[in-house]
Image (cartoon, rainbow, N blue to C red; front, side, top):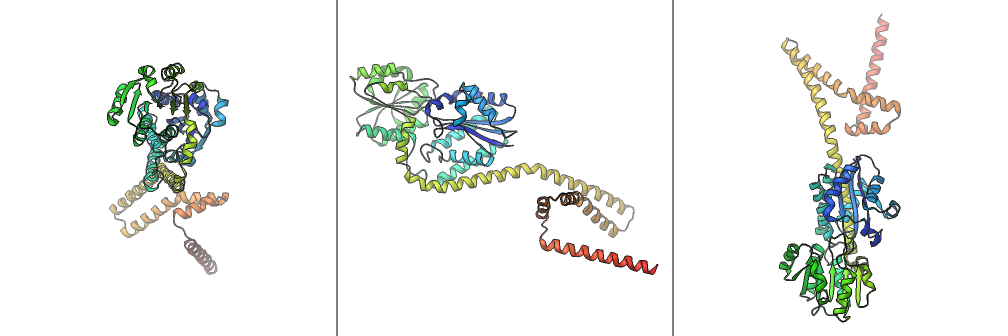
Length: 446
């Protein structure tokens, strides 16, 4: 069954379009069920929706990507003519290579960033929960994650801390030469925000507060890193206390509006606030960048910083690409072996049926008192004739139709080397000569 990897990413589409297409994390399980239910040709599906990409992985009955594009257009109310120019699609081996590159961080904004492997794993687990993960994508997920782990352990691609979180902190360090006496508000409680906390701590910054829609999640992170906790509703009243705001939630709506930011600036007596919005869709109202004393950066603004820090990983990426290609080839080999099991079982079952029938007949002949030697010889001849009957017909048909590839396949299956074929031809030739000679003698005698 063909496998499709379809999507858009930061490489092909601007953030304004990506945030319109982004699929809400809380609704993904239901979205997967809707996708499968609305398109009979799609038998399996998993969805990866992050700040940098939306990708749909499918096992389909026919190799056609347009239904997926039409579905995405309708589901997100984005005209198809806007999606089509920025969308990409990959089939089978190319799809496997793409997914393994994504999971390994080779297609990330920050080359080799580690979070994406966990996001891929979560995408497959969610598909399993939704009941949309079948044998095709299940096998591919195993090879994808195994390859990503191999890239992580066998190359140096993850040695340096380069990620969107790292870039956000690096940008803050460029704005403020000393972070130790600054206060930061981190909105969200996911893996990206946790990385931000870690990087800020290494810069000697300890006046941190975490705000999240679910207070329990924020408290769990706060307890680990000894930070303060806020709810989203408390942000407007406390915003003026912070010099740095970094946000990364899964919200479908604006979390921090321009009005709240304006009020905070006034309370700060126009002391600047540095803001980084890592989320897609965006958490911070983008029009806030129009305000004096507000320095607002989006995820696409971090690309330049990331590029400057990636040079050390590019050499390791070359070795990683080789591992990805090997992983994709191994996936295709295992899929081919799996797909051939039914054929092999049917082939063996057919041969065993022939054996059982011939053996039953031979045993009856022995029980009747027939010469055992003759019975055994006849059994061997019967088995041989029946087992080679179908291949013989196939060879004759292929020869008549000039299908040399079929002939070559048969030779490989039965180990018919040129020497064996030559010996067989000699035997046939000798038998024909003997038959002709015998026929001649018989005629002369008569």
